[in-house]
Amino acid sequence: MSVRKKILFLILFFFLIFLFIESIGFFVDYKFNLGVARFGVPMLVDSENVVKDPKLFWRFKSANVFKSRWEPAGEIKINQQGWRDDDFQIEKPRNLKRIALIGDSSTFGYRRRIEEIFANIIEKKLNDMQLNNVKWEVQNYGVPGYTIHQGWIVLNDYALQYNPDYVFILFGINDSRPSPVSDAEYKVNIISFEKYLQKLFSYKLLMSFYFKALERQKMRGFDTVRVPLDKYEEFIIEFNNNSKKNRFVFIPMTQPYRQEFANTPFAQNIKKYNQALRNVCLQNNIEFIDLENEFNNYYLKNKRDLIWDACHPDAEGNIFISELMFEKIKAIDQKARN
Image (cartoon, rainbow, N blue to C red; front, side, top):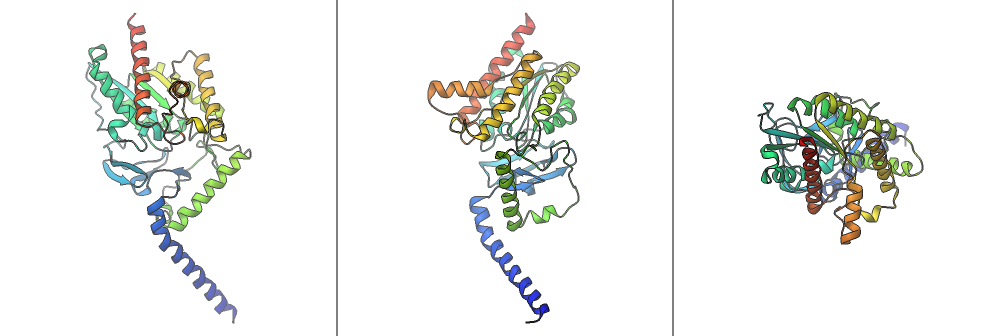
C-alpha cells in the first residue's frame, strides 16, 4: 500500500471513529449530560443559553426562557438584564429597600424552582412581616460557576446602579477550583470557533476529561486556582470598602457543604476559604453569616443534611438560609434605629 493510500485510510478510519462517537454521544449526552467545559472553566449551563463576556467571561442571554437538561425545575426565565429574576427597575421609591444577592449556582438556585430559591423566600418573608413598614425587593445576581472575582464586577457594573441597601455574597466553591490560569489572568476570546466545537460530543468529552485531570492534579498539590486565597481575602475587604462609599450594608456568607464530604479534599478547600472569610470579617468588624457553622449545627441537632449534593442547599436549606438572612437584617436594622 502506497503512503498516500495509508494516509487516506487513516483519515477515513479516524473519521468513522469520530462519526461513531458522535452518534452514540448524542444519546449519552442527552441521557447523562456529562460535565462540559464552558469558556475555559467547568460550567453547568448549556452553551446556547449563555454568551461570552470580556469581563464576566460568560453571562446569561437576556430576556430568555429555556429548559436545561441539568435543571429539572422546569423553565428557567432570565430577565431583560440577564439574571434569573423579574425585570429590574432603576427607579427606587422612597419606601423601598433593595437587597442584592451576588453569588454562584447556590444563589442562582441550582435544581430549585423559582419559589424555592432563598432570594425569593427572603423577599416574601420581609414583605409578609412588613419589616420597618417598607417594601422590600431582592435582586438575584447568582450565576453558576461564578467566583468572587466575577462577583466584584457584578457589584460595580450592574448591582450598584440600582442603589442597594444590602449586599450579600456567597462564594468559595468555584474560587478554589483548579484552573490553567487565575480569573485575574484569564482572557476571553470573543471571536472563536468554540461555539461550534461545543456542539460536538467529542469536544465535550475531551474537555470533561481535561478538567477531571485538573481536579486530580489539584489533589496532588496543583496550586493554580481561579481565585487564590489571598485575593479572596482582598476582595472581601474591597466589598466592605465599597459598602462605605456607596452606603449599603455588606454581609458575606460562608459556604456550607454536605457532611459526608466534610473530610474530603473538596470540603477541606472550602473550609480554608470559609476561615479566611471569618478572619477578615472579625479583623475588620464586618457582619457575616456563618452558613458552614449553622448548617453543621443543624446536622448535629437533627441528623439531617440540608445540602442535597456536595454543596447546593435543598428546598429546606434555602428556607434555612432565608431565615438566617432575615434575622441578620432584623438585628442590623434594630441596631441602626437605636
